[in-house]
Length: 267
Image (cartoon, rainbow, N blue to C red; front, side):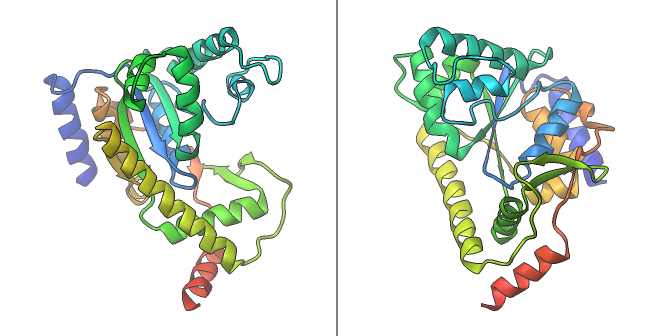
């Protein structure tokens, strides 16, 4: 029933023009908040581009690799930056007419520095992003269970496995397989970092005068289609496009995660 109400409300807003379609949107998030699942759902809808972390990495050549361009390592000249940015726009739209971007909190400073080179003369980050993407809509995806977020990050860093597909096969591995080992200090550090990143996003929204659509990992995990419908409605697309879109990733939390939580809380 809840899913039907969400889809119907979003459809009414869409049908009666209460929100005009946005040319772009930015998914603001932090590691292990469900953004990979959210990005896969948005891409699968066929109405919201192909959101990814196009500004991840400290250099323009890193950005180029993200969209399949080969540039000279270390070349961050303005012509190269323009070429890479054009490719990012093209790939991020994926032929849908809507550009999607996932922006991790740790990538904001580098992204703003480079966007200021492309679109100089703007006093705020919001103004730069407006110049680059045409008044994007914002979505803030966070995880209420910050301890679960920290445990998930530490396990991913230790095992090298960051995501699995819905069928259980590996989707993203960043290091050779290794066994996870409970590490209280490392979990505590990840917990503090996750809370700091969420607070930094809240401060940034306030400073920039941005009111994002706020989503939780918990709601996304419990009802992916309803959450996708909310985002589609927020960016002015038909929420009905969420119907039939299946999650592309699987949960990694298991009995080991539960054991780590109990041990951490026990002190």
